[in-house]
Amino acid sequence: MDYLNYLNPNVLVALKTAILIISLDTIIGWIIAGKNGEFSWEKAPQFLIKNVLPYVGALTVLAIYAHLDEYIMPIFLVAVGLVDIKFGKDIIIEKIKGLFN
Image (cartoon, rainbow, N blue to C red):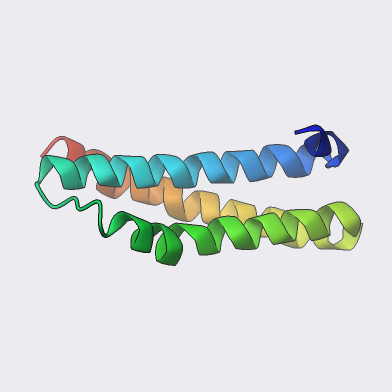
């Protein structure tokens, strides 16, 4: 984990925040699916590959480029902001309602 010390702290915090929100959305979705009896371990890897990995992968690639080139930093920050808004909205509006229904 020593290589993380080389990343710009702003990039690292933004990336960690986005990954945390994406993970939280995924876990709450799985809890709701389990509660409703719809969760399937067989479908979990496919869900991760199709719905989670593209966001995490794209943000990680942008984070590396933002670290290497300061002109990419605004693009990275906008992308992180949009992902945070999307998944934050999903958590607040859909997932929290699903937990209490």
